[in-house]
Each structure stands twice: as C-alpha cells, then as structure tokens.
Amino acid sequence: MKRTTKTQLLAAWLIALLSFALVGPTLAQDSRGAVHIAEIEGVINPMTAQYLDRVLDDASDRGAQLVVVKIDTPGGLDTSMREMTKAILASPVPVAVYVTPSGARAASAGLFILISGHIAAMSPSTNTGAAHPVGLGGDSDEVMTSKVVNDAAATIRALAEARGRNADWAERAVRESESITETEALELNIIDVIARNVDDLLQQIDGRTVQTEGGDVVLDVVGAPRREVSMTIPERLMHLLTDPNLAFILLTVGTVGLIAELYNPGTLVPGIAGVISLILAFLALGNLPTNWAGVALIALAVVLFIAELNTDGTGILGISAVVAFLLGALILFRPIRPGSPALPDLQVDLWLVGVTTASMAAFVLLVIGQVARSRRAPLLTGYEHYAGQTATVRQPLQPTGRVWFEGQSWFAETKSGRDVDAGKLVRILDLDGLTLIVEPIDEDSTLARDSKTP
Image (tube, rainbow, N blue to C red; front, side, top):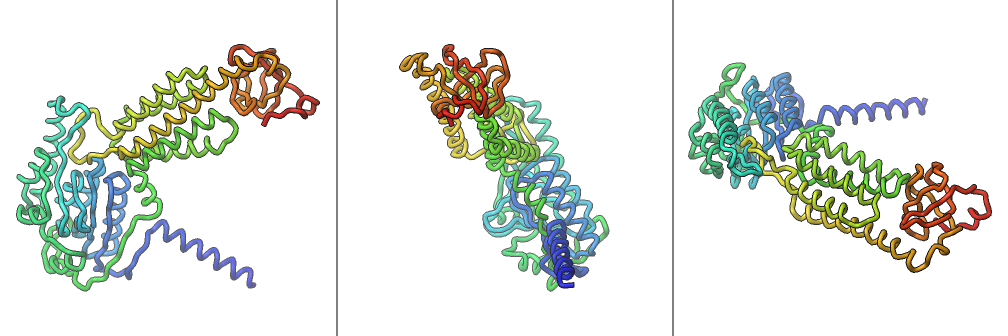
C-alpha cells in the first residue's frame, strides 16, 4: 500500500511539473476581470509572436479586463512584428503596450508594436524610434530602399491613424530614423502615459474608454487581480537561442566539433556535440535576420579546414579557412540589400569574433606545426627508424587514412590495398615522403605485444 501511495504521489508530482512547464506559471488567482501581464524582451521573432498570440487568446477566454505587455526590444523580424500588431488590433481585450523598465527601448519593430496598442505607455528614461534600412551596400540600391521604406511607412501610418496617434511623426521615424525619449513621445502624441511601474500605469488609465474589436471597454483595473503569464520553458529556450552572440557561439562550437571528430575519428563526443550545436545554431539563425552568405563563408571555412587536415600541411588552405571564417562572422547578420525598418541593427560582438577567429588560427598553426615536425623527422632519423615498428590506426585505412605513431598523426597507406579499421595495429614497411607504407598485423602477435604505440 505504501509503495502504491508513493508511486501515485510521484506520478502526480511529475504531471504537475509537466503542466507547469507547458502552461506557464501564474502568480495570481484565476478570476474574470483580471489584468494579465506578459513580458517580451529581446529580438522580435516567431517565438515572441506565438507567445503574444497565446497570451491574448488566454486573456479572451478568461474574460480578462486588460493585457499589459511589458516590452524591451531592439526590433526584429518584419513578419513576426506584423503578426503581433495584427493580433493586438484584433484583440477583444484591451492591450497596453508598456516600454519598461527604465533604460528599455522599443526600437524598430518595437515602435510598430507600441503604436498598435490600445494604450501606449513608457517608463521614465526609455526611448522609442525606428531604424532606416541599410544593407552591406549602403544606400546604393535606391529603388529597393524606396520600396521597403514606403511599405513600412504606410504600415506605421495606418497603425497610428487607427489609434489616433501622431501619424506624421511615426512616418518620419521610419523615413528619417528619428528616435525620441518618453517625454518627447508624450508631447508628440505617440504614447498615452508615462508610468513609473505597473501600479502607476493602472492608476492613470483606470476609467478610460478604449475601442476594441469587441466594442468599447471602460477600464476598471485598479484593484483588479493580476495574472502573470510568462513564457513556457520551450518558448524561453527557443527565444534564448535568438541572441546573435549565442547563435554564433553554437555555430562555432559545431564547426570545431566536426573538425575535431574528423581529425581524430572515433572519439564521438566532439562529433555529437558538434552536430547538436549546429542544429541549435541553424534553429537560431532561422529566427534571426541572417545573411546566409555569412553562413556560406563559415561553411566554406569548415571545408577548407578539413582539406588542410588531409594535405601535407602547407598552411594555405588553413589560412584561407581563417579568412573565410572571419568574413562570415562579420557579415552574419548584415543584409546584402536594405532590410525592413523593423529589423534591428544586429551583429556579433567584435570581441567574440576576435577570440573565436584567434582560436581557429591557433588550431591551424597547431596542425601545420605537427606536419612540419613530421616532415623534419625523416631527415633526422632515416628509413631505418620506422621499418618494422607498429602504429595505431586512428582514421580507417581505405586504403589510405591516418595512424598514430610516436605521439604524432601520420598519413598512411596499406601496401596491399587492404582496408584496416580504426584502433587496429599496423606494421610499418616503408616511408614514401610523409606517408607511411603499412600492413595490418595480428593483434596477438609478438610484434603487437611489444608495441609502444598508444
């Protein structure tokens, strides 16, 4: 009986934990007429759009009085921004978009979202504005720039007019990259209130009448119960991956992992870690304004690194790989053509680029140095030093591959053309330049037992 009870308690605990992860935490009682509070921080992407859509649907189903969306963003994807503004415009529950805390911003896509709210509010010491679209080519593509800007300007003007806000300034924010503080935003009729915190915001808007898709709503929010609707654990994880620096780190780790696995096959851990990192990296890149030419350059760097590992180590391919990697990192989030004004000016931190590129260069020097030591060794010792000794196969011989001999990795080829699996022992018959000519030997032979190879 006790065992059954413990099992039931454990099952109930696991179900509760899973429900918590999928539904999200709530910090207030679930009652109608509550104020639902959501928070969006970072780049606007498909996950933030999904999160906001879930919050608004939940608020509508529960008969919420108001949804407060606290926001701090540099901007984001145009498609995600449009999904969010459309969801706010169609919401039967009033939405207050609130730029907070102090020091926060609603830039680029954030401005569009701020203006779309039934109530627009900002904390002291915050700012809002839009970025003029600029690609790697600057303003040279005037036709493309004009199309992008005109489309964004029309969109933000329509949002401002729908909410009775200053449409002229909103359009200038797109066309001329204007940014303003919360005080200027209030004076220019871009926002409705400046509030120190959520309590102050609710005090100031209490009793106001707002027009929603469901009709006019008189706000009765002072003293209303509050319900914090946070991102679920999967949503948080997916949103976290949209940090440009994290995406670049994952891409770098994945690259290094694959190279390490190819350089020392059979270890598995670097290869598995590399594949997982690359999957997460591409998941992140798909939710960011990615310049895929930068990804192509980093992929080229991987190919060149692998080629360097399978040559005599002149260093030309390795140096080319470092250059390709550096260029790819610098333009990874820089569009070739002008992008939407909703996009933020994202880039990988230059210190991070410098450190990772230096690490790649050090790895190339290590490989070149090892090959150089191997190249010098025959001149110092001669053929007699190698003949008859044994080596361990590190990369399967088919019939060429790599073996480990005297603390170094060597190219090797079987004289008979036979294949030899990794981990097997081979006997050195001859030396052809930097390639050892070998033959497989029985592991239980006297020569194998006397072997000093690792």
